[in-house]
Length: 111
Image 1: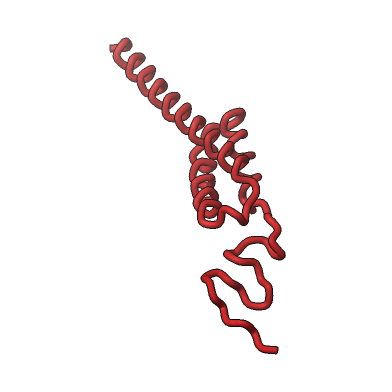
Image 2 (image 1 turned 180 degrees about the vertical axis):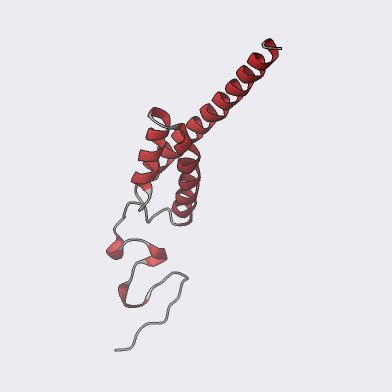
């Protein structure tokens, strides 16, 4: 028996996963999904400096999921971690602005 020709893009030889998905038609979780979610939650609760990290990692993971939408099942958790990272980054920027304004006010009042 001969191997049939590959008729459409993404068809893999020997029954491999099409388009980089899980083997045998299964769906797998994105490997960074849990990490993005944990970093996003920690950035809101514990350390806002983790917010930009969660945001960037979430953007990268979402881009990979968008390139292969049938291959990953945890888009919601990646998106939640990314949104938490965005909120934590906004709070970080706001707290830096308030800190700078407070330092300027203290410096102006001491003169």
